[in-house]
Image 1 (cartoon, rainbow, N blue to C red):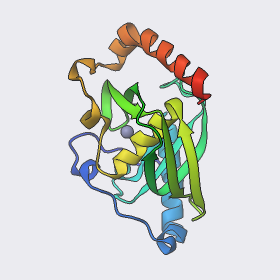
Image 2 (image 1 turned 135 degrees about the vertical axis):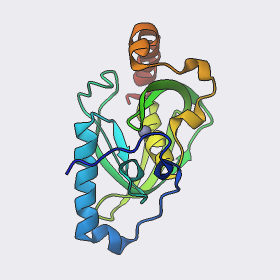
Image 3 (image 1 turned 135 degrees about the horizontal axis):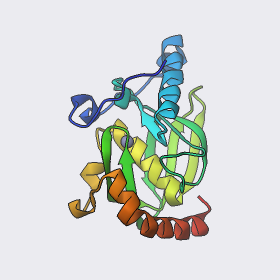
Length: 190
Ligand code: ZN
């Protein structure tokens, strides 16, 4: 079932989502919710979607990048469901990511993100996930995990003068950003 996506200003996006227990995760209701989260993310062409973006303040998010029309320059990420994720930066080095968000319609902005992070979580079956994510993909993991702690990319925009609509991103900022992305992807392969 495709769920409705909360937009900026709705308090659910500012809530710290609660952790999910193993029992709750295994329940048919939660498993069916995860199916909805994935379906909604795909329907909206998102690179990721957090549970509180669809009005469920629990610590679950989905990430997937295939041939995405919203982000054609993004390296692919296979479908990943993270439950109770924790992110640990593995370096102080950051890159300037140009981010957008399904909960912040028609706005993008530049956000510094760590170039390499360790992600620990459960998958949807409760198995341990422990992976290092780098490059542009690391930015996607940081963005989605932020949601579960009530943070939006807007909070991390250092220079509000970088905020722009999607049309103006395409017209005025995309080319320079894609150059930066290509350098990052060449370095990390992701
Ligand atoms: Zn978002």
